[in-house]
Each structure stands twice: as C-alpha cells, then as structure tokens.
Amino acid sequence: MNEPVKLPITAPLPRGLAGFVSGFSAFLVGLKLVFPGGGLFRYALAPVIISAFVLTGVAVGAFFGAKYWLVEWLNESWVGWLGGLLAFLLTLVISYFLFAPVMTVFAPLFIDPICEKVHIKYTGNELIGERSAQAFLRRQLFALFQSLKWTLVVLLVQLPLAILALLTVVVAAVAIPVNAVIQGADLLDCPLALRDYNFSRKMSWNKRHFWPATGLGTAASLLMLVPGLNLFVMPAGAAGATLLMIAADGGEPDSTEPL
Image (tube, rainbow, N blue to C red; front, top):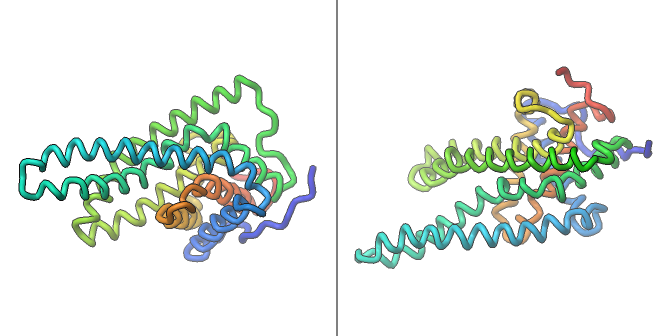
C-alpha cells in the first residue's frame, strides 16, 4: 500500500451548496492533475488527442447534416442565406452535447487509467488493479452500452431542451441545470463503473450526492464552452469524479456504501 496524499476536498461529502462547491472544486482539482505538471498529463495526453479528433469528426458530420436539412430547405427562399449560419450554430450545439457520449467509448483505454491513478494517489490502494482480457472486453462492451445510452439521453432530452432554450428564457432556466445534472452523472459513471456498480446503485449514489455531482457537471459544462480547454473535459472530469467517490467514502480506501 502506497502512502496516500491528503484529499483536497471535504470528506465525507457535504450536502446542499457546500456539496455543490465540493463537486465544482473536485473538477478544478482534476483539471490541475491532468494539466502539464499535475502528474497525470501523460495519461491525459491520449484522451486529449482523441478528444480533438472526436470533436472535429462530430462537428464535420453535424455541419453537413445540418447544411443538408437547413440550406437545401431554405435555398429557394429569400432567407436562404441564413441556412449556413443556422447550420453552423446547430453544429456547435450538437458537438457540445454529443462529445461526452462519444468519448465514453474510449473510457476503458484512456479514462479508466486516470481513475486508477487518482485512486492510488489519494487512498494508497488500487481501484481495479490488473484486469484479464475477459474483464477488459466486458468493460469495453459496457462502455459501448453507456455511450449508446447517453447518446439517446442527449438526442431525446438535452438537445431538444437546448434548441428550445434558444427561443425562451424559461426553457433555458431548465435546460442549464438539467445539462449539469446529466453531465455530472455521466462523468461519475467512469469511476463507479470500475467498482462494478449496476445502474440502480449508480442512480442511488447520484441521488445521495446530488449536489456534489451537479457541481462536477456544472464545472465540466462550463469548460466545454472554452475552445482548447474543452479537450480536457473528459480526463479532468474522470479525475474529479474519482475524488468525489473517495470523499463519499469519507476519504477511506474502500467503499462503505450499502448495497
């Protein structure tokens, strides 16, 4: 067992506004860890590069899809010139929301090691340790399932809310916190999945620690708006989510949560 470093956030996790601040702070600590000089940059470098390709691929696909539906639809009208602008705006929205679900596919290869290193750093113990080929394959299949699940959530919940939010302030007031909650749950799935939590246990965990999870998701959502830094959202979010999981245990190496 390695000598653990003192946990940089409050443990056990507080509730209410203090819990929200802890979740937000956990993301910032995770961001610091995966930045150059933070100790985990070499582990974050691969997901950062993959993130750049994913964002570019999603943006290109979204733009041509939006252009087909909008420009072709409007080109006979005097407002046809708006088609390109609308396609560009829709591309930004789609890329923003589809980024995390698509990146989930790469979690077993690039995100899980970050969770492992953070867990070792702050508890002294491994989170998962060595995995057999069968265990890795099972984890990869689970990641694919999670990716599809979050993509459906994006298409059925987040994207419609985001588009409606452009039309009315009332919907915007709903869409922003909803996105933060979903983003936090998505990021926390990374370390919780490594403990083999099933869906009901994950939802129970997020319900008990609603405000910290929302704080984590809010910080991630804000960073996604910053070009360049948004490439660090997944590694920083996974590191921050692992910190929250450890803090929820009271800062102890092993989980004491009930089944």
